[in-house]
Amino acid sequence: MSRFLPNLVEAAEDLVRLETTCLPRDERQADSRARGLAQHHATYRFNYTHVSPLAICDAVPIRDEFSFGWLKVIVERVLVALANRAELETISELRDYHHARHRLVKSLFAGGLDRVREIKQVAREALRLENRIGASREHAEDIGEYAALFRTIGLPGVARNFMDDSLFAELRVAGPNPVMLRRLTGPDDRLPLTEALFQVGAPGDSLAAAFAEARMYLADYALLDGAEAGDFPNGQKYLAAPLALFVVNKATGRLQPVAIQCHQRPGPDNPVFTPRDGWNWTIAKTFVEIADGNVHEALTHLGRTHLSMEPFVVSTYRQLAGNHPLHLLLQPHFEGTLAINEAAWRHLIASRGAVEKLFSASLPAAQGLAASGVREQQIMQSLLPLTLRDRGVDDTSALPHYPYRDDALLYWNAIRPWVESYSRLYYGGDRDVAEDVELQAWVRELSAPDGGRLSGLPQGGQKIETRSELTDLLTFVVFTCSVQHAAVNFPQYDHMSYAPNMPLAAYQPPPTKTTGATEADYLKTLPTLDMAELQMELGYLLGTAHYTELGGYSAEAFGGDLRVASLVNQFQASLRDLGDEIERRNATRPVAYTTLVPSGIPQSINV
Image (cartoon, rainbow, N blue to C red; front, top):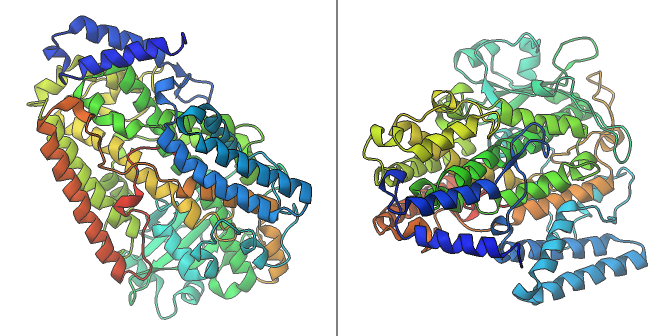
């Protein structure tokens, strides 16, 4: 009981403070405000060893643990996954064990709130994914064996055309990691491409015209160059740092692949593969997908959504009082984040966890990718319009088909006016921003070596001087917690649960010649069936669990400030309008991009 009492008292004090949303200068209960902040300083502390050297919450407070509503969503997925395991199990005793676990979870959930502790333990076990699975540890002898793993878990549609070059290109602009593409302004010396090789993939086109018309794009995985490959649990794995070249087809406006090189430096054992190279081309594409999957999971997804937002959560609770308007704005976008991040570092990226099992990259290499994703990110240069411009993919006439870009920008352009109009309620001008002592303490802690350790914050992380800077930063946080995380999380089921489409590991090295590979060589490159089953389960669990929806603020949000209601209504109307626009776009797109429909975007990083 002693652990719960301070939190109940703290919650009661928060309710009192929330009656009057205000900046520190307008606080009438300064002592109460100071006590609340002091309590949060003691409750929320940074730890730099959980995912070294990143700033992670030392211990998740009870108030930030998973809600019963979230547990309900997760347990529903766990039940499906357990049933799938039982269907795959060939040993009767183990099949009975999985059925028994299924019945246990179902009965625990039937107990409702009275069984929350037991349900939380089941959810933690599901995230650990360490129980014996039913598939063989051998490689498939036929590609159909991967689809056969899906029993109660539905087989995603991508299994029908995963080998098509058109899908390979589509994943660069609408897949799980749609942020790797960069426009080329001229030839890249690392990729010696002749006109003859180019025209294999783009017949009737020319290199000179493609460069002149800004139609050449490169997916470059140089950050994997030299990365250590793992060998757990089924033997040596292989990881490449490929270069994948694409051109925009002038007739269709869509990308098409023209060349792949599996390593960064050209040489006799590192040829340029083209679509005429049969199984060698298929294997080269597979190494691109493996690189993309490793970068996606460790850096784009874990590093630049989950872990980069953790310091914002901790510093918001430590430095902004419970009735500070920015605390109230951000709190709904932080629900469940500390808890899911703790589950990730305790289980998924821990020794012998799912990451070490599934990835080609060794565990230290994967952890290093995640850490570098946070440490090297320059926050104020990571605003969506700036990142698109930096990669040269903002020109819709040069790159007409880029669903992630186009739909994500709709949300950016809806979120920014919302947070700007909200902040204007409390900040009359730049001076009000500069004089907010809690806000300035917040930004300083976000960048401090003994704080959040983030880079690229306004004024070197020392001060926010203008309302425009504040609006940009708040937009980045809200967008990352909702839209960006949705964009990189939910394709884990649609595109990644079926391992042949985006394997996370290779079990043979890349080919050193453009001819000679067979289907058997391709199958030996793919993950073993037990790892494919694990990838399926993890992709299903994380890629289908939607909890909350962007814009769905509770009636208690914003401290009862009646002025906010009309602004929320305007934001919600904007979301409905952009949802209609996405529906219209999908009706004419060659492939519908449903990842960013409004109903699929949670408020926060909670899975």
